[in-house]
Length: 511
Image (cartoon, rainbow, N blue to C red; front, side, top):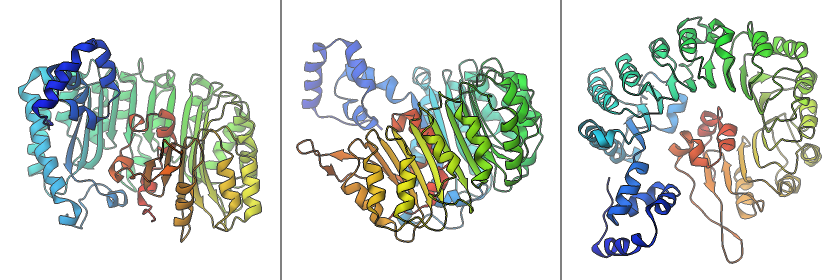
């Protein structure tokens, strides 16, 4: 884990280090990538002491090996296809050794344990039966007990699920300082929420496919929110458990994400009482759409400070969206809008007309995500679509469930007119979409910094001499799957991709 350096490098580091005070070197270190930190780790004692607390402030423990087809599994059982040499047996072995090395050092070295601020677990074990998992989980429990400064705990995956004794250890050792808690949905994890008292961000990952918990009215979530109602500002839940929670537990929320809602029986109380809400994400079941529109008609001025609005999963046509248009029209602070709906009765340009018109009526709008649907879009449809896209937006995600008449100059002209665009992500479901990707890479918008297409995401690099685009490697697909705001360097971009990542991963890259 520790990079090596020759005597010459160490001498050079010792010679340069005294020329700047440690405070300035500390600022430099915080801007280094992890790879650069490891490279300089052994250059000098000064660099070692400065880099150590930064490099190990975040620790990731990996059980098993995440693979893209995990996104197609329900999550409880290991995938049937075994890991082979081609599937990186070496990486799997490296993960196991790395886990032991890091966890044992944490257990045995209290000063090192106190450095860890963010702990992430990626649980994708391929071992059947509880035996080996339990041994590894008990080792993790001892390490968690030694870490007393954890502010963020994130558990991804369900093989295995976090045991109650792990969450109890976390509450005992770091409950006083834990601010961000990310957990998979299960009866056990929900029952442990009330152990924590000062959480600011609580995100519950989706349950297994077709899980009865979507319809659950378990009171564990209500108890967990009540225990944290004095600090909780960001909340993500799946299914209908939100309706068991008293509204007073939600009054301080700035962000609310409710996914796979099967009913909206308590949403009117949220509309009328959660006035401070700024970020709202809703994933609606088909049967709830009409009720949702009725509620918006009754409360058009709700959420006056709304900054970000994301809608997912439901079907809609042009007429259905007028209440939503009226509701959002008054939100002059709305910076981010993501419409993930689909519809078969949209007349032209792939997006309901009221919502296309809305894009130009929101003066603060900078970040846009749109699902474009229909049977066909010809150049005229693309021209109509482009007319409603504000030229000043900085981030755009297009999910194309429509056949374009490609190659279409109108499509590339539309992108070229977005002169402030820094992040572009396209999910294209055409049979032969590779040409679109290559055309954009060859001639990207002048301001573009990060480009995603299908399951690929890459930084755009340009030749410093002539400004021409240079070929750059895409991110590892695991980085796309587990991307954070820190990976992007921009919280807006992480928000735009959120709740679409699993769908993106299923798209195979095109050459």
